[in-house]
Image 1: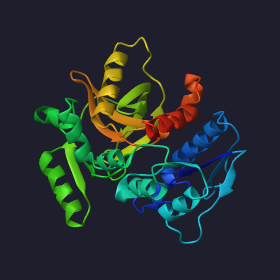
Image 2: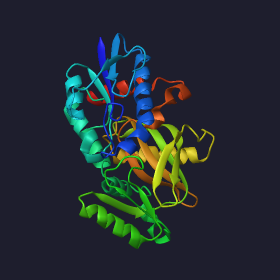
Image 3: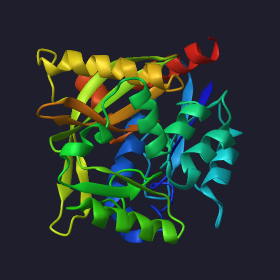
Image 4: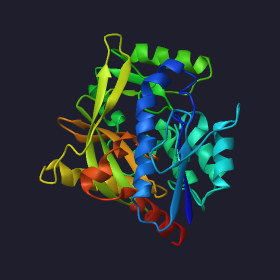
Length: 315
């Protein structure tokens, strides 16, 4: 019997940067990820299997077992407790404040379905990630600094569009970054890249990646410059689209630059009208683009993610 624990931070009772309003807005996305992961595991033909997941956000999918944290139990303590009772743990958490890294450390390499500690540590910093990608010849926002008309400030370890602000001058953006740093927040400033916001969904292992889908991100910039993430449209670039080959190459280069990526991972980028793909960040975890992707592709991605883990462990 293979026992798998699925944990998604928001539906498990967590908060985004301690912000209840942001957490409420993002909760449906988190719950949808949790349910998609659990259902995919039940279809994965892993032999006899049980799937447990956290019921803090309401009913869990049919066929799964519901578990809950103890009152006041920290997320990483809860996940560690469940890891001791299960053979595999598939967890999603923000990189913010080291949450995803703490989950991976609490679970340990042998049970963890996902990227390794080094990949998570690197991708938990916007600045460090982009420096690594630039060193491997991948275009990033600072390659467009001379032509930028807007600048964006965000948490260096942030996830999604939380606390992300666009400014019309570099001076105003720098002042915003200083204000954040003065209160102990790690801020990251970069040129705003004009173009189509998109993402790659990857199945990664051992420095290589298969491009599963190219997705369109619904990003809204309000009149006051605040950025909002409204979800993702799956698989919006067909195999016949000439951009597809370029993006498959990008996927492979990102995986080579960050060889600890394993299982499902995401790359956010903007397709610039003149420069093509400009990398924005790497998500070393399952993302919202997982929801519905197995059905879209006619594959059981959970089974392939488990296989990728086994391959990595025995490499």
